[in-house]
Length: 422
Image 1 (tube, one colour):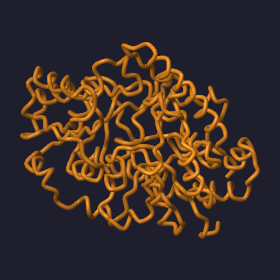
Image 2 (cartoon, helix red, strand yellow):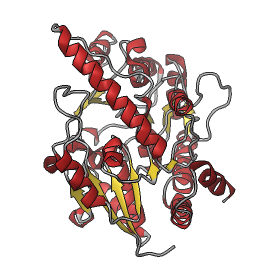
Image 3 (cartoon, one colour):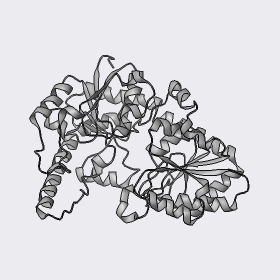
Image 4 (cartoon, one colour):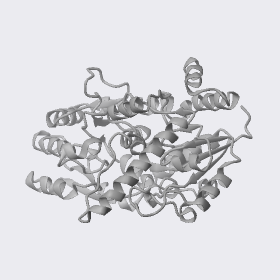
């Protein structure tokens, strides 16, 4: 494949595309990251890198486009002609367009999306749009009308994308969304995290924000959102943090090895106060360290100091992506759900499977007796990540780019067949 092709990565939820960009730049490709959707600064490149030169290929259009999200602003017109012209002028000279988020803005601007890589909500929202209730009925009318229009346009744009990259087997809701669209996805892991030697050396340096852990002899680290109180209402966002907290409390009462164990939690999510209340009821507040929401690059510095990482316990999905892979890339073992509801076999990922308080307690107790066993799990997790998600996985994307560029008129089904044979 020619190295002089130009690739645009559009939108950057969770810094997924910024990570992908760094892998592709490492391959010598010309790649720009372009932010169109409104996005919190917490998920911008500066939150995921210590190095200023890595921001050179970032184009931030958020303040220039004035795009209105119709789900939240029902009174404004969906499309702004000036904004669409700017999108077209910015993207029309790229050879490949890879996008996530509200891609209907791109198709409205006459831009063909070659690869659509949903981050989650931008995709499964088509199944169950959020419903709003206001004291003034006519607001409901306009809001719901706006949602309907949004979903129609987003569905159409997703269908028009040349390839959807998505591992639908890990989340039941993603599979349902694919069925609604009557489309197949290309089962390819997306490299949402990046860490080379330069980055690793940086995170291993001392950071005073983690000084409170320096005297601990066992650290259980959980950086997932505190979402657990109303399981039914939370749906995909349910994390089951109470299971982790109760499992740790039971471990404290029965373990005899560690003198200063602690559980690290973050003030992030809907149920922070409920978690604090539960911790107080269990009388373990002296063994819990709370941290404010922070950038990923600083979260890594806490992970590498920890013994075990603990994720979520949602039976609708396995512990996958974000938090688990952040543990993998730091060579740390992680506890979470490894079996999707309806299946009896654990996933291929090196997740230490747990679903309830008893499971968590037994794993923690076993760790106290077999630390080397878990260190090996951490090393295997890192190897799995690099082989299936990280540096070795990028060659599969190079193949994908080659197929797309060599077959500009091939239909979606033909492209998937070609790629599956590779």
